[in-house]
Image 1 (cartoon, one colour):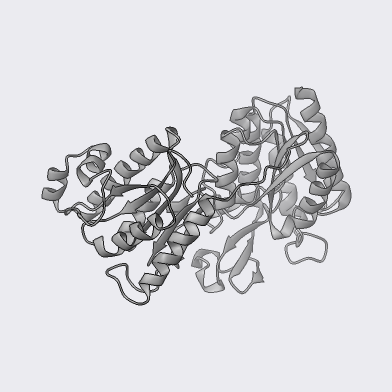
Image 2 (image 1 turned 180 degrees about the horizontal axis):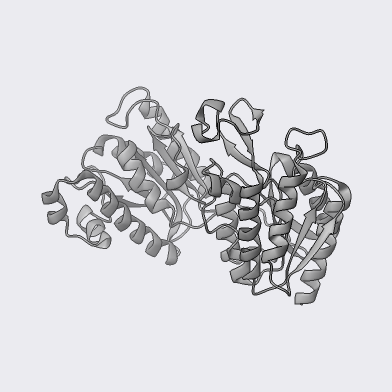
Length: 409
């Protein structure tokens, strides 16, 4: 049942999709929940269910009068304005503590506006979008938020025997999620974020064991672009006490236009927040692409490794590693807190070992030398005669991170 003064937000175009939203509204109310509705449709509204924020309110929050938006007849502009307006309304409702969950339905345009609004809702509040675009890459729209996508199978354009049960299931799922009593786990001594990849899993697993033994909670983030962005965002929200940035591979994808780029902001948050951090150049030997035929033609003569049928890794060369070393050092140089870099001299990934497909000591040396050349005088670098996945390297990482944490106290 609904908590007092807590509402489920229903977001979508009530002008052209009143049938489906009317059914969604009734389904949510049947579970005893209170509802706030937000109309992102610019062509009109509905009287089938109560509307709390009409299209004119949404447009105004987006910065334009609804009449002008209708006169413009610019679909792209309308989606941007209504998405922005809905986001501002949702952010205000969330700040007032009124939101327990949010749901929306739509095609590609409606989904864009819904996701724009949902990204303003904090982590942990359930968000679900029933959409025709569930199979598309919506990572840019979702960003670092925990939004659940549910395929609509048919278009969200009227009631039929396929969409009706999906709407009812979506409503039931969201209502159930919104009423889960989340079990709280004690953080112990503190919380540590850690970046990982398949090629650094052994290192991360060992670090996690050691940190658990010391009473720390560990939060691993997959360095696939979205994971890096999420980690950076949560660092800025103050979720962690320290960072083990073992897998900085997203810098290589950003440099070479790979598919796992986290953007130029990667590795900035911990430095800005003064978080104790230990950094390793993990997996900077690789750039990620999808299937082999997706690799840009300019790289056709490079060294590749098929990690899986849909993951093609490209070995970084000496020139790229020189650039990456400079980038990494300069980012860590800006740290306002305790920080150090630890280098694994016998390889920076699982496949960068003697006899391995990405073994290239000269490329690694270019990376290490560049880091040393561009680091500040006061920034400590430790070299370990081991591969990144050797137990001794993980033990060195954790020992030094714990020292940094202790020095901050």
